[in-house]
Image 1 (cartoon, rainbow, N blue to C red):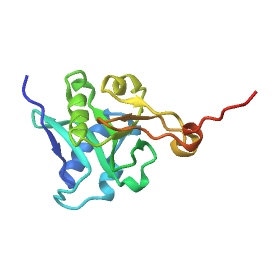
Image 2 (image 1 turned 120 degrees about the vertical axis):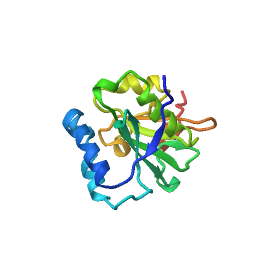
Image 3 (image 1 turned 180 degrees about the vertical axis):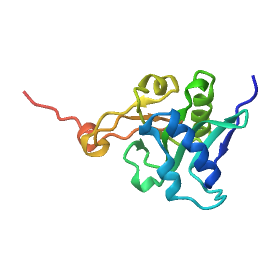
Image 4 (image 1 turned 90 degrees about the vertical axis):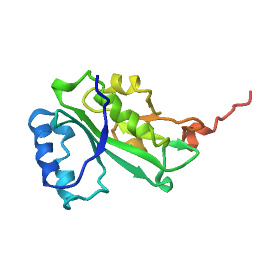
Length: 169
């Protein structure tokens, strides 16, 4: 099998056209077309979009954002982390390692990674080494966060979870 290469996608009209295939054949919830249109600048190399081409066609993609540590409510110690959004592999290309390649690319930065399990993808994220976090209503707002911890990082507990009250008899 040929080596899978993850590429940063340019924010341009060609990428917008390629994203239309995902809108047409992919899950509506995972559409990135509006995200791309909002950031469109010809050949901008600072795009948050990454993808994999197979036979000249974009077959897998994701958004990857670096979140400043001052906003970290997931990891201990608090630090910069990556938020992986809307990973999607077109149906005919699933099960061929493209999704794993995108996840491994995100992990290669050796920063914690947070994502939300969408489209009944919990099993996929678990298989990729992600764990569900302890749900916190004020932080997670109905989402289903999964995280990957590099060595030395653990889940950040809320003050309520971190302290244990003892009752005296």
